[in-house]
Image (cartoon, rainbow, N blue to C red; front, side):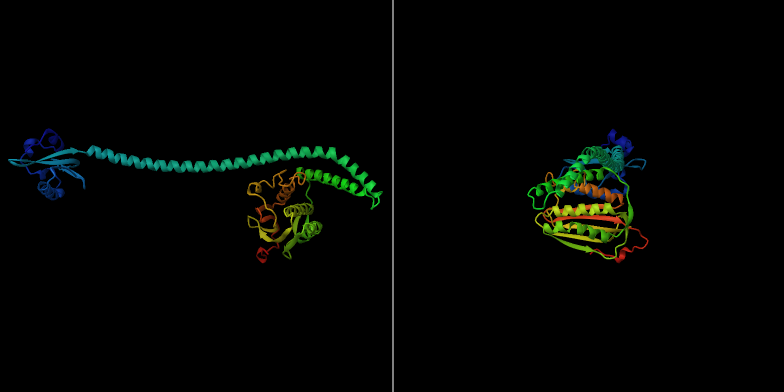
Length: 381
């Protein structure tokens, strides 16, 4: 009974064309029967108004047959002439288009954010890797600078101390040769001789660490060299009540290495192990065939003690030059640094595992030739 200008604009009908016509003409055919049922229920109910399309979308049908999404509300009014229904309809086509566009834009934005996030994560990972690389290079440069300083210092110390030390040693040796074994002064002279020798060894260690001497490569029987090293330190271990447990596999292949450097490695590690067990303990020495990280055959040598162990915060520092956990005057902090350099010059690797109060294991891995070596024939003891 009423069709205003807004309705004419939305539906395309003029008022005179639609007045007194069934409401179905303004609805898509598929919704007409359902709409009639809803209107009946609404008419019988107590609610006087409600929003249409709360459960499903509402659509209108224009004069030209096209459909459009609509937002509608309906109300009813009891009059003497009967019940009057009022429908307020809004064409939400543009809003729907905008919503769909927003959904598409949001999806596109999320996709771009995900892509950009992935790019940033990759860039961050690359940056972290680069930072680690720079950190490692900085450490290497710092290490090189320290080595250069040590080299200059060692050369200076050698020139300043070696000559007077040699003079002192010769004079002491001469005096000792003229002193009777039961002379009460002999003990003091022996102490001076020992201390002079210790100072000489300190200078030699500095020179060994700071200089890359000419390697003398020869064929080395690793079992023989280990046994000789054990013979040299056997008395020292026995005095400290340290039980030695050798576990050296027989028939290990021959190494091509610098014999003197290997002995220095073994003696340094064995001495450190004994120093870590001041109250005695057990030192297990293993030697067996294993593999390098790249799969090539290698001889593994392990020195396992039951000493005091190394705190985690010091574990990464123990092979740095001049770092020592020993008492002042008991160590130079060069032993393990020299070991690491010697192992690296043999294309090997050295690592340390330790637990405070349990003990420490030093593992040295030295590559061997592959011509006659079958790693599968050997197993760790």
